[in-house]
Image (cartoon, rainbow, N blue to C red; front, side, top):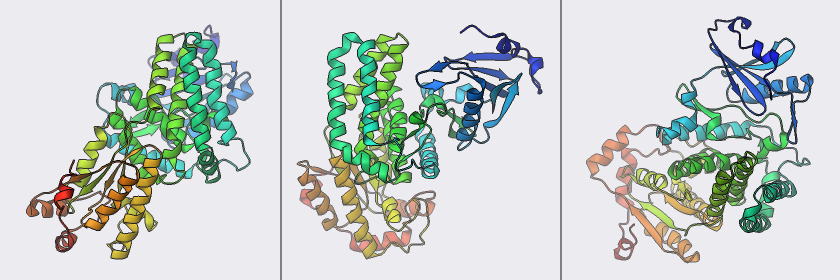
Length: 470
């Protein structure tokens, strides 16, 4: 689209009511972004496409107002107002350093697990407060989920005619996986997991503001892209981290999101996440093909093919006294997972969830009774069994100081026809005491007093168990 005179006029620094020495123009296929001093102004192009309508000024103004409302849910300090330039609406934003966008941070090798832990908590909190799709709406309904996924293949068949066999195989996988998970899709809609989400949560739409990963630029122009299962939302970020060659960080993000969302278990996010991940990969293939980049499009087909093949499943448990390094060891396993398909289930987190407490809440030790411990290990087993059934490897991070506790998970591994591995951790007693005294900002409430009690009841690994050490 040729640059309209009204937009060219806004390149004049004198048009702005604040200090501006130079105006930069960034153009996308649906908008113009004017970078002026400390602020940015986003104007929508007068275009009508199959998935959006900016055809008249009233529609553009409504979409600007929607963009402001929706993005202020998590980026209030970034999205400031809707203003007018000669009758044309624009979203006024505070500028930020483009180098702090997470795609750039990741490309420099500076994206850390701490960044993603913070992001996971932000996303989970946002999802928990986002509006829930009405029960009778089309959003997230199983038939709508399948239709949206198959639409990608209909369009790709025309765009990538030479890839017909691969597309047919991926379509067949999508249809088969949908048939397997249909009840889960229905249950998630009924359970309130379809919400008014961001809709486009890739690394390029996340930025470090005051050191914290903050979402921006959600989809305001199409309700179907925004009212989605929260599992579809996190699947996009997970896939984008894989696309950036960071499977360990993808694994870390997913696990941290599960910690804060609690979206585990029967009909949990893990049941449908691979379906949504492949859907997201196919969307990217379609976009690349529409831009004429067939090579990039076929790379996303390859990604989708890889995502559709579950790696061999494993079940591991930790073993050790409080402070011995179980969480550190299991964290290292997550970050080293090249398939991003391992789920860690932490006893300290799930114990609190059983009692309606947040992962970082302080119970004052009230929930650390023998009865609560028995309930906790039963929950860990249920969650591990379901995660394995959904096609994810599992690490259970708990003390497992008693043989009966370990035997229950060995039996679970036997149900799946796999061995159980034990990640045994140990450290000298003075070191254990020092670690517990220094511990802060952790889900565990173990103290030196708890450690002393553990010494009295722990049952060391026997000869057979020592052979299960990983």
